Image (tube, rainbow, N blue to C red):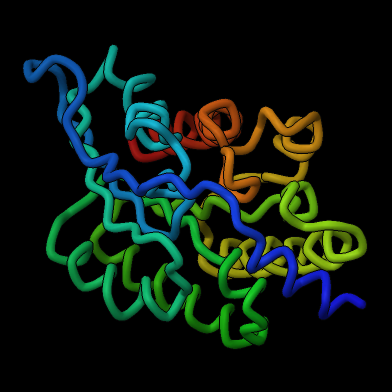
Length: 230
């Protein structure tokens, strides 16, 4: 029954939105420069949104633009797994020095049955290498995947469990490497279970409201890291 529900959810015909590149500069060029990098999957590229302006990365950049000239660079790609980030995105990110690098990956790994140990090993390598070129590395975490409307019962409960596993991997890697991690489960679960307005028409990717919730969860961690790195 679960296999049938998964097949239905994955093949159900629904409108799909394009992807966006949040890369850009924000604020007064005379302000101190802040180099911000984001790596990951469609959570970075904002699939399903109408504009790159609604992505959480740009919301965070605009929040910081009153104090900094924010140079935001995105290396993300829709559908990316940790292997893709490691092999395709990280080499480009390593060519530039960043003040803060944010990694948002894991949902595709777990939903596509990548073993947790493999995901953890790849995420660990991503973090280790980013630390060499970044003053701060933040793991975005993975929230309640069971809130995704595209997943019917009981697939939604399975998805919720796999989301927990992915977030647990993020926490383990963050603790082992002494870096920050966003607590998605504590900060966004209630919001993403509040109704379909949190999701785009494809019933899978977050809407502009969903990206705003992600940004609100991330901003306190970014602010804390700015204080820590001076």
